[in-house]
Length: 137
Ligand code: IDP
Ligand code: MG
Image 1 (tube, rainbow, N blue to C red):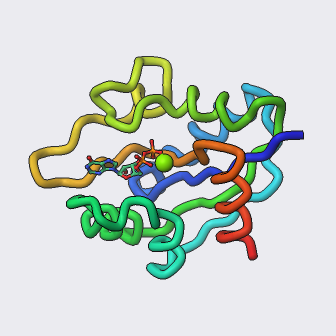
Image 2 (image 1 turned 120 degrees about the vertical axis):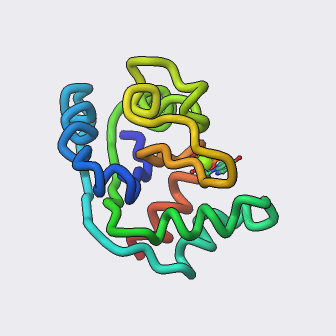
């Protein structure tokens, strides 16, 4: 069974959207294999987002992801990596379709703010394996 790593980001926890997101996962029929509330450590986040360290928004991203507790977890199911990405919607909330999590619960940031977009999901087999072992080692 395919697995993916997912997060319910600090904005979602702060806004009381944890139940809503988990409910969508359950209704879709994916298995929640692991789930943990934590405060993300900066070193782990740097590793997680290693491909983005040169981006101009990287420090805003770190501030966002450490702004409060978040949930980390593992989902299992057929084609769960791509399916969960579709459920999440596009990275930029203004491009995320209604019906997706980001399209229903997030909006474009104000100028100079980070994109707060509720959820994370691994983007490939390789990322899923890497992220699961990084966060649950
Ligand atoms: P993803 O979360 O849809 O996989 P990535 O490109 O991997 O998108 O970016 C990781 C996270 O970094 C995004 O979810 C978002 O929170 C933040 N981010 C991505 N691009 C931008 C940007 O252009 N400005 C501000 N934050 C961004
Ligand atoms: Mg990504």
